[in-house]
Every structure is written in structure tokens, then in C-alpha cells.
Length: 408
Image (tube, rainbow, N blue to C red):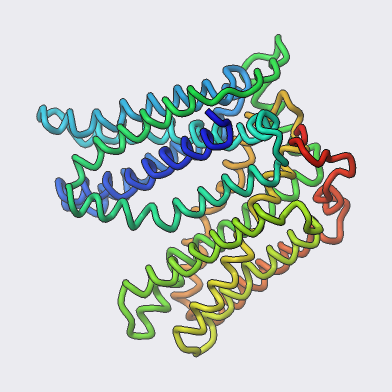
């Protein structure tokens, strides 16, 4: 199987399974318990274990190999998912057992997704493609899954019910493992011996912290992700409600961003390697964040808000291929797995804090002051690296070959 096509297909299957679980499991909890508190507990255990696994699972990616880890994680996740409907049918699915199962699902999903992301350099090398093209394609798959995945998952759950949807989830994960097993790439670089798990884990942190560019990117992404998540999960619904519109408008706003970001990812895939990387990154980051946040402070019509969100989505779609290329170029080959997993986890670490902080601000001061402050913080954080030595690390290496992938 063509390595690029195989990786993209495996990501499509596993990402679709993840979106399906994110709708089917909470809906199953709501149907069986009727308790929003139970739904919140399930979400906390699944998302928390996902983040923890990404943070701590990096050394295993390098020790076992990204491809092998991805296969194992998908199979473990499939078993955990299918246990939910099986245990329910047998009458033994207590709530504590459900929490255990969703924790296992999160523990498998985190390293599984990280493994597929960190396979990009090896796949690019095997296919003789530039790393920007591969990360552009994988970024497009990710954006598509975020746009179409929830709609498709919601339709499946509505048509079949939550439990049959979970069986479908398990099937998708098994198919992802089978596809990934057919992807042939070069052997992973052997990890240095004698370090042990903790040594490998901390060496991954050190690799990131000792590199000014990677360290700065993690800090920038942590702050901007926290603001973005709070805006989409809290500010947009409040803005829609205060303007007398319904929940379908929330979906419309999200769809505008998602569809536009897919377009941005496709543009980056096609011509990203010809664009000045550092300039594209900073322009993209500035236009992807502050405008769509600040527009919510204006008393404008819906079409203006949708247009601004769509423009921000296009520029947001340009960022992932650049971030992926920089990451793989700067990480040592023997630390690609743990570095990718650690950066992904750290970039999401502050996200849960954005909602409470911005939610409290909206309750005390209203939407307009809070979103303007959020846009200002976003802009400040986005531009800060421009004036430090870390910005030079965003530049494309001058020795990059034209017809083959750069080695990370």
C-alpha cells in the first residue's frame, strides 16, 4: 500500500471513530442515566485520560515504533469500546465500570493519534515527498474530520442508536489497525539504551525545552488553544442566544470555520512549500485568531460574523502543515514519538482553563469587553515570538531537498 494513502486512510478511520465515540458515549449515558453530572464525569475521564496518555506515552512510541504503537492502540481502543454495549447487554455495566472503560478508550486514543501524526516523516521519506505536503494532507484529514465527522456521527447515532454506533466505532478502529499494518515505512531509529522510561520521558521534555523555537511554539499554542476553545464552546453559544438565534446557528458558525480551514489546508498542501514559512506562520496566526474573536464584540449581522470566521478558518488551515514541518525538522530522529506526543499534550494542557476564566468574565462584564481582551491577549501572544531568536527556527532549512522528505 502507498504509505501516504495508507496513513491518510488510517487517520480517517480512527478520527471518524473518535468523533463517533464523542457523540455516542455521552448520548448513551444521557439515555441510560438522564444525568448531566454523569455525562460530565464520563467526559472528564475520557478527555483527561486522553491528555495524560499523550503526555506520558511518548517514550513508548519511540521504544515500540510509531506504526506498532498505532496498531496496538487502535486494537485496545476497539476492545474497550465494544465492551460497553456487550456489558450493557449482559446487565453488568455499572457506572464505575463505564468510567473504567472510557478511561481505557482515552488512554488508547491519545497515543494512537500521536503515533499516526509522528509517522509523517517516515511516510514522507518512503514516498519521496516533501514533509510539508504530507503534513498538509494529514492536516486536511484532521480538519475534515472536525467538520464532517460530528455531523456524520450524529446522523449515525440518530439513525441506529448509541449502542450500534459503538459497535461501528470498534469496527472502524480495527480497520484502522489493519490499514496501518499494511503501511511499509523505514525502520524507526533505535532508542538509546540504558535510559529507562523516566529517562526517556524527561529527555522528551528536555528536547522541547532546550529548543527555543519548540519551547515558544508550545507556549503560544497553549494560550491560543485555551482562548479558541473557550470562544467556540462558551462565547459563541452565549452570543447566539443573546441575539435571539437558535442552536443551529452555533453549528453554522462551526461549519463555516471547519469548511474554510479545509480549504486552507488544501492550499498549504499545494503551495505551502513555496511560501515564506515564517511570514506565512505569523500572518496566518494573527488572522486566524483575533479577528473572529473581536467580531463578536460588534453589533453586526450574522453574515458578517460568518464571513470573518470563514476567513480566520482559511488562515488557520495554513498553520498545521507549517507547525508539523517545523516540529519534525527540529526533533531528533530518536525522539520524534515522545516529542510529538509531548507537544500535542502540552499544547492542550491549558485548554480546560479557558472556559472558566472567560465564562466568569462574561458573567461579570458581558461579552464585548471579554472578547476584546481575549483578542488582545491572542494578538500579543501571537506576535511575541516574532521579536525573539525562536522565530528564526521557523525558517525552512536551506538544504531541504526538492524531491524527498526532510529528515526531522
